[in-house]
Length: 93
Image (cartoon, rainbow, N blue to C red; front, side, top):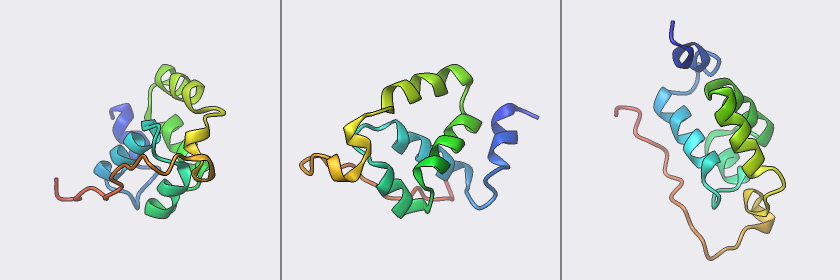
């Protein structure tokens, strides 16, 4: 079984398109973890676990290095002028 499919089984309530969207949101500098929690119910530690499980180790390390200590990943520190669409993907894609 491919690694990607195996890792998605850890999140049975999420469609593959939703997992992909969460990863996309987590990579975006403008999207705070609080927004991901409101949209999907995943706290920061859950997003980190999902990223660790669904990404290659080198990609995960690169992402963690980027977001560690980053002010924009926390809503209280986010510049309110920047907006990103948080619309959930259509699961029928």
